[in-house]
Length: 176
Image 1 (spheres, rainbow, N blue to C red):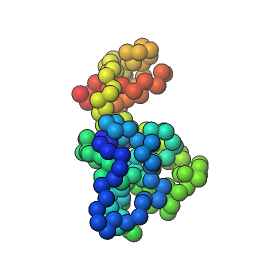
Image 2 (cartoon, rainbow, N blue to C red):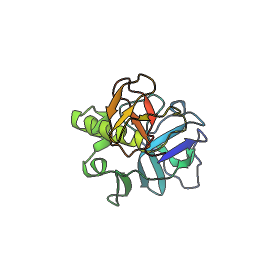
Image 3 (cartoon, rainbow, N blue to C red):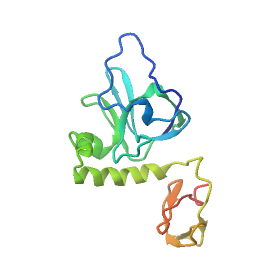
Image 4 (cartoon, one colour):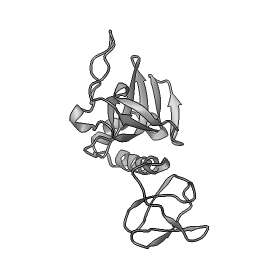
């Protein structure tokens, strides 16, 4: 799922609760930029999106959903749903591991490694309009990077792929 930032100040409804703990400040977001949503939480009637800030930290941060519009509404294949203690839509390790996001921000190596793997998958899962270059198909198993000309074996069914040599993000020609 991808969302686009449309404002820097949340829409405040009568009776809204206090600010979200750990919420991003307006200088960490850019109006008009799209963000990958790594988790959705609904707490006290408020929708909270967990996204990566403009600072590119190693963890997502919570932000009020009223700052965004949905740009691409497809949900991640990693997401599961739970209602304990409130509504969470997130990758299984984020939900099943108690205090996962706290452990992540504390630098817990297991949590950092798990999120890093999930983030890579989710960042490549859906198309990105800012990515213009497309990998070339060599055969059923191999793709080639148009930037460095290196080839790699890839059976990914995500919209984007990463060149294993130069790390360029490219459109997956098998999906388009």
